[in-house]
Structure formats: structure tokens, C-alpha cells
Image (cartoon, rainbow, N blue to C red; front, side, top):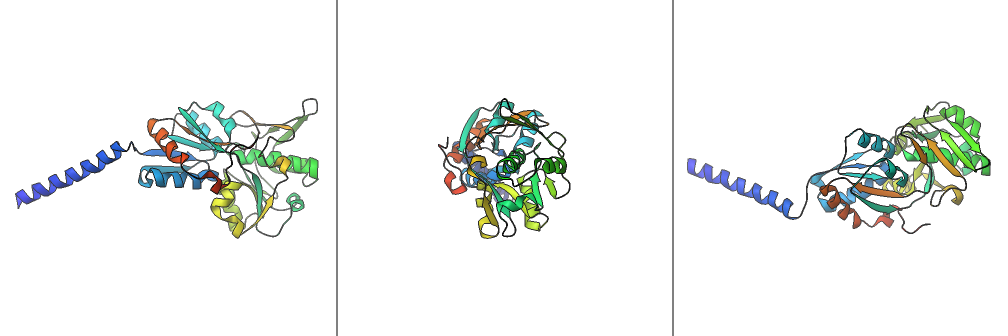
Length: 286
């Protein structure tokens, strides 16, 4: 019996050794991925190719992700919706994931003109790029389309819009961001989406890949934002956001995945095989 037990143990060790060797042979190691909520579907599909059991995906707002990385907690891969944030980090490799649109999602059959009065969910611009882009869009919707009042937005969110006519630049100071009145805030798009799904707000701003991955077209009213401020291209005036992380130019949406380790590089190879158009991510815009 003792001999049989020893042989059984040896067989298990051999099997485990084969499994470990198999992972090594295909170049797979465990990876930690910080992913913006918008890119969760993309990250999950890449993980399935890479080996889902080897991938730890953590949903983190892009700006907050930068702050975590700056503090020394560096993941293998960082997937962000804002190319401008690359200046704050130093990755080994960068994969361009393409551009996408800003849209508005509502629980009822609202129109664009209703955005100035509905309960609005907004992501904190100090932790998520969707936050400062929503604020830029609200400003322009008010100035160009008469949809919202910049003064009311400033009061309700404790922010400041400063327009410089000579340079046609709008600086948005969001360092003291705090929602009140008809505005409700959460740290990132996933949190804001939970407000919408739970009925705590009427409408939210959301990225097209997030809307597609959540199937919102089938459950909510999705409104197109006017093309001059949907962020597939740079906005009609220059916007900068003064955040707790630093000064950020608010330009066209351009997502990326950045790797910091060898295993992160391997995960980026899996990402390259994901059909990004399925998630509303498009290459070659502008």
C-alpha cells in the first residue's frame, strides 16, 4: 500500500510539472490588468484567449489607475480610455485600441434638450476621464446648443469653467468636484451606470464600447451627442481639465493598453486578436 501511495504522489507531481511546463512553454504567466470600465468587455475577451484563469482584471477608472501606478502599485497591463494619460506613466509597450464616441443613455424617452433638467449621473473627473469629458460636453451643449447652463453645472458640481477668448481655451478646474442638486456622482463609469440601472438618475454620459458591452441599446434610450462634441475628433475649442492628478488636455477619445512586464507584453498580443469594432472602437479616425 505504501508503495502504491508513493507512486500515486509521484504521478501527481509529474502531472503538475507537465501543467506548469505547459504554461511556461506557451509563454503564459499570471497577469494583473487594470481596466477602465469601458474596456471591460475587451479585456475579458483577451483574457479568454490568454487563459482566463491566469488573468486578474480589476475595474479601475483611468485617472485613478494612473494615481495607483504613480504610487508604486504597478499592474502588468493598464487599459485606459484616454491617450493623454500616457504622459504620467512609463510603460514598456503601448497598443493603440482606437477611438470611440461619447453618448448619453437615459431611462426614459428623453431628448437632448432635456439634459438641462434631468437627474444626471456624472463620474468624478479626478478619477475617470468620462467625468471631465462629460463636463466639457455639458459646457459646449450649453454654449452652442442652449441645452444646459454653465453656471448651474458649476454650482451643482463645485467646478469652475474659465474661458480665454484670445486662445479659445476652456479650463475646467475640477479639483473640488462634489455633486449636489440634480447631479449624482460616482468614481467611475461603472458606478455611474449602477445609478442609472437602479433608477437613481435619469441619464448618464457613457462611451460607445461600454454601451455595447452592457447591451444598453436594448434596455435604455441612447442619444447621440452632436458630432462636434462626441470626441471622435478633437472638440471645437480647446479644453483642459485641472485635476488632482495634474493638467490634462481633453482631446478626442483614443484608448490604449500599456504593458509594464514581459507577461504584460504577452497579454497585449492576445489583445491584438480581439475584433475591436465589435466594441465600437475604430481605427483611423482623424
